[in-house]
Amino acid sequence: MEITQKIENWASTHYPAWFDFVRMGLGVFLFVKGFIVLSQIESVQIFISNINALNGTSLNWNAQVLIQFIAYMHIIGGLFIALGFLTRIAIFFQIPILLGAVLFTMPGIRMASDNNMAQGGINFVWSEIQLNTTTAEWWTALFTLILLISCFIIGSGPWSVDKYLEHYEET
Image (cartoon, rainbow, N blue to C red; front, side, top):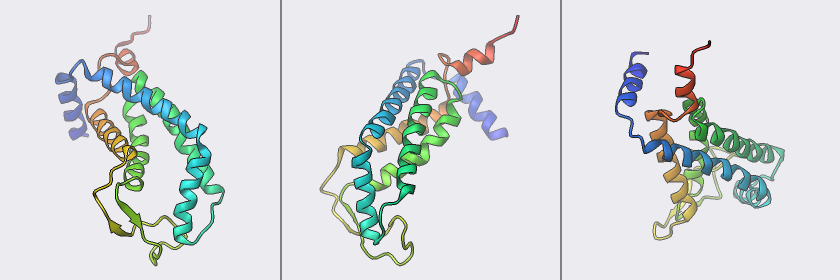
C-alpha cells in the first residue's frame, strides 16, 4: 500500500495539465477502435482462422466470444478512460489486450506451423524473423500500450470524474 500511495502522491504533484488531453484522446481512440472491431468482425475471424490453421485447429465459437469481449472492453474501457472514471481499473483491463495486439502484429515475424507445446492453442514459437517489414497496426498497438502504461502510472488527472467525485461533498 505504501508504494501505491507514494506513486499517487507523486503523480498528483507532478501531473502535467496537457496529459488530460492525451488521456481523453486515448479513451476516444479505444472507444472508436471497439466499434471498428465490431464492424470488421469477419476480417478478425479470418485472422484468427489463419492462426488456427497454423496450429491445425478450426475456428470455433471461442474466437467469436473473444473478439466481442475485446470490442466491448475497448468500448467501455475507452469511455471510462476518456471520462476519467475508474481510470486505472479501465486501463488495467486494456493492457492485456494491447499486449496481445503487440505480440500478434509484430512486424516480420511468421509463426511456426509446428508447436508441440501448445497444441490447439495460440502459437508463440516463431520460425523466422525479418525486421525489414513494419506494419502500422504494430506501431499503433505499441504506441497505445505505452500511453496506457503512462496513464496507469500517472492517473486520471484534474479534469476527470474521479477527481470530481473525490472532492464532491453531499449537501
